[in-house]
Image 1 (spheres, rainbow, N blue to C red):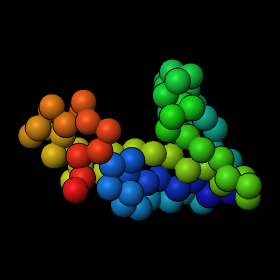
Image 2 (spheres, one colour; image 1 turned 30 degrees about the vertical axis):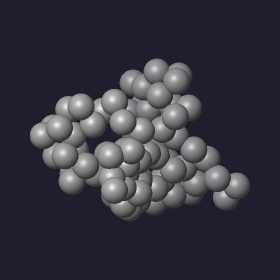
Image 3 (spheres, rainbow, N blue to C red; image 1 turned 135 degrees about the vertical axis):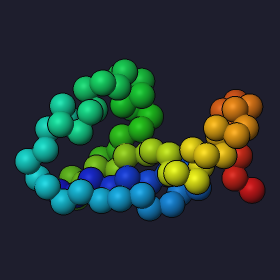
Image 4 (cartoon, helix red, strand yellow; image 1 turned 180 degrees about the vertical axis):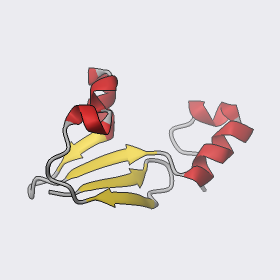
Length: 76
């Protein structure tokens, strides 16, 4: 089972974990609300986990332009 991290804005691959023994607590998933978990974490048919996160480039863009948070997508 792998855990894939992808930017939710630009779809850039951010990282991948291959460890099978990680718990939700070790990954920090327990800190998310039920709504955030449903929005950010997906499971595929192979049992792999896909986590939507924010890459450094998009994070910087959001810091410079906080009004982008209101937009569904700010990447052109």
